[in-house]
Length: 115
Length: 113
Image (cartoon, each protein chain N blue to C red):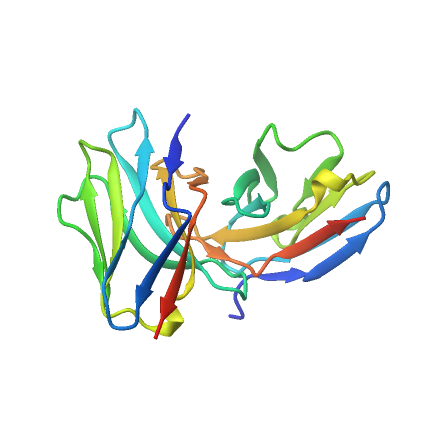
């Protein structure tokens, strides 16, 4: 079974600074998808960024980028120019390529943004 | 398109009572998922529907839990004889055919007292 590990329960970053959230996963599949989701206090899971395993290029979405290391099974999220609105729980998630496949989540990292 | 709607947002129930939650997915999404999220944890998969067919169930879904999706539209999740361990956030997500993207609802927070 696939597992996703987030070893940082909490992180803190100053406004305008850069922070990196770590995620490792375990799978025997060669093709899969990886995601970072943000869950603010409003509770709705919001997709931040996704990466297809077959793509070597790291995904980027505005201030958010990933460092995908397939051999190391590592998928970290970098948030640049942090903003107060970035404060939330961040979950790393894995999905097989099957059409019916479910998401497997890590335990999350709570990000605090300070002035 | 109003996104994925879940009702109610909060439910407090006494142990032993039955509860039912509803999820209305985005109308063109044929796939619907239920997840459970306990405090300090990531969401855990419960069950999955493709149209009206329930295609996968987690071992977390004990025989006190039942889910339906009549006519492939909205879905209900019922918990019978609730226990304190059922206290959690229940999240619904939907996904369109041919996509690996998901849209999540805001969840139903269940408290069993």
